[in-house]
Amino acid sequence: MAPEAIDPSPPPAAALPAYKGPTAYKDASGTSPETFNRHAEEHGTGTHAGAKYPHYLPVWDKEVKYPPLEPFEHYEHGKDADPSFPNLLPPGRSQVSDLTGNIGAEVHGVQLSALSDKGRDELALFVAQKKVVAFRNQDLSTHPIPTALTLGTYFGRLHIHPTSGHPPNHPEIHLVYRSSTTPSSSAHAQDFLTEHTTSVAWHSDVTYEAQPPGTTFLYLLEGPSSAGGKTKAGGDTLFVNAAEAYRRLSPAFRRRLHGLRAVHSGVQQAEQSLGRGGVVRREAVGSVHPVVRTHPVTGEKALFVNAQFTRRILDLKQEESDALLKFLFDHIALGADFQARVKWAPGTVVVWDNRVTGHSALVDWEDGSRRHLARITPQAERPYETPFEEDDVGVGEL
Image (cartoon, rainbow, N blue to C red; front, side):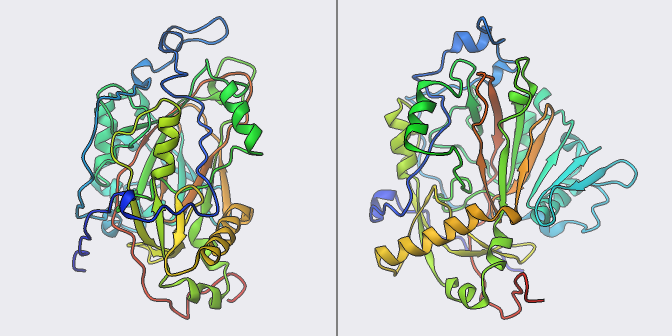
């Protein structure tokens, strides 16, 4: 197959109309430069120990600025994979169990840090098929950070998040952090829940970029389930199968979605970061992507809209766009029969394909346990769609 043509860089968000969309960006993370107490996080408090991985504690350097991202040619390693997965899932050593009937798996007996290139190729395909995979008993967090980044680099150019905290000298690591000094009962969380009934915020990562992520890694450093306090559960992550969400729609509805393009914007995320005393390392951008995208390896079509970043369907009037987006957002959010809930445990690395899934963190614990995870986010190809096909069979049509 000939390489995909590279599109120009995305326009600055200021070059796109300031679409608001039917939903607003929600940030319930609870940690910012203004609320972060480094001494307490490093050395502990009367009720919570210091961070288990202090070299992963976040920094926010307001003096650092990055230029706009340049387009690049992505190579999709899943195309080279052996579909029987002999290097990823060797017989007799690996155990795989499905999380649900249509999304997710849990794997034991595989060490991601030790995979060969062939094993990594198979990982890309396996994750594209399963959508999200929880690998247990991993050693990734015990390796030096550059070793973890080397694993991610195989799958694409590493994204540097425009607003999040990162470990010192490693901006390619996106930290998901709720500190022990900012518990769920903190003022920020209470203010958030005064305005919102839930912390659920379905999204696919940084879709405002021209080339959003593909195979993505998130590994647990500390969480409520690993804390020494009374909480032994909490902080799970929800995932949704966006390909199955597409197939559940009627053929007539799916046909109508094809050809539609939507604006994805990072403006609200940047504004909220600045409003909380945070950083914006790179000018906020917006990109236009198809509402239905095609996976480059599996050929699956998936809905590619999300309530956090998708703001307007082009060529529709505002009321038409808002109504259609709200229907699609609700369809994704309410589809419990094509969703999975991943429970975190020490040594867990979750790998998912951002092209065919959405996800949401949950803030559901109240004892102040630290929730500390690291994300490695390789970018992939620019989203594209292939023509509607009559044999795009949906559930109930077999």
